[in-house]
Length: 219
Image (cartoon, rainbow, N blue to C red; front, top):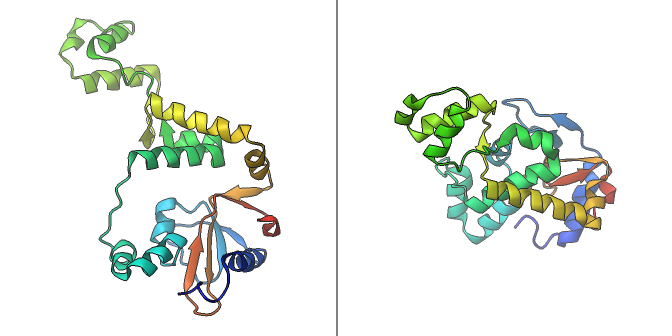
C-alpha cells in the first residue's frame, strides 16, 4: 500500500497541502502530458479520469480487487453507466461550485417538455401554424416549439423535477454558514492535482471540490 503504514491520513493530507503551495496552476491544453507535479485548471472531467495516475477511489479499488482495478482503470474496456442520482449530483456540483453561468453552458431545461401532442399543436397555432401540423410526430412538434421559443439545447437536459432539486440543494448550501464561508474564500473549484508519491514514485491525482489559493488554510 502506498499510504498505509507510512503516514496517518491527516499526516498525508498535511504533506500534500504543504506541497501544493509550490505547485503552479496551469491551464489545460488538449493532449497535454503530465511530466511534473502540477495543478491544472479547466481539465475536462472525463480527461481527468482517464489520466494514468492513482486516485483515492482507484486506490480503494486496487486494494480490494486488483483485477477489478485493471478492468476499470487500465484495460480501456470499461464504460461507466451514469445513474439518475449521479446526473443530479454532477449538475448540482456544477451549479454550486462553478456558478450559474458555467452551469447553463452545459445544462438546459425545456419548459414545454411535459406538454402533450394537443397542447403542442395549440401552442404552435399561436405562432401561425394551421391544422396541417396534426400529422407531425410529437418529437417534430417539440422541435418546432423549441425553435420558435428561441431555446438553445445544451449537452444535458434536466426535467422540472431535476432542476428543482438542484436549485433546492444550492439554496441549502448557501443557507449553511460554514459552507457559505468555505466557498467564499479566494480559490478555485474543480482543479486537477497531480504529484508523485515520495516513497514509490507512483503518480497520484485528486480533484478537490474547492481549493483555496492558500493551501495552508485547508483543514
